[in-house]
Image (cartoon, rainbow, N blue to C red; front, side, top):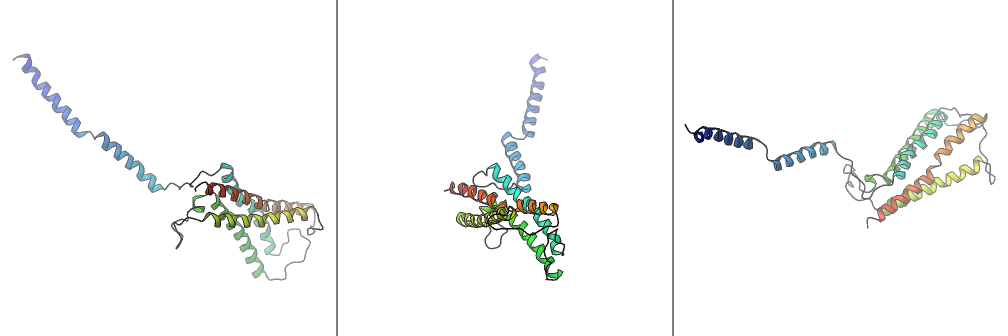
Length: 218
């Protein structure tokens, strides 16, 4: 038997093994395509939050997160008032029964926080395009003028409250605040209400940033 005859089966076996390995190995393109699809599947399932049309400044995101926190102290401060505890204020108790004052104060606090959360629409995608789950209007673009007008009016209104807070707290222009049993109660009321009236300038700042961002879309 010649050396060529001895080598022929080996070469044949090597070629057969190579062909088998090539046949069983996944095609690179298919693997890449499959990998991309597999990667896209969990991502789509998990759901990536859609981005705004243009980037939101980092300071605006921080302000939007801070507004609900600024409202929380005064919301908690006013809750005992609904039950007839006046938080150190020297004034007559409300003439209305508890079944009126308690729901009123609770509703006022909840509405305050709801409005604070609504301000986040000035920095989040749903402030530009309404979510699909909104009945009748889902998926529609939010008119920039409508959002800017609402933000400007709200910001101006709360800014007026801030001016009133300054005049009342420091007794300026004939304004005077209600009396308190002691300085601790006064300080508590001053701090909690002072945080709340910061809403005005902050909402105006968010509205201005929103307007500049949406104007750049054109």
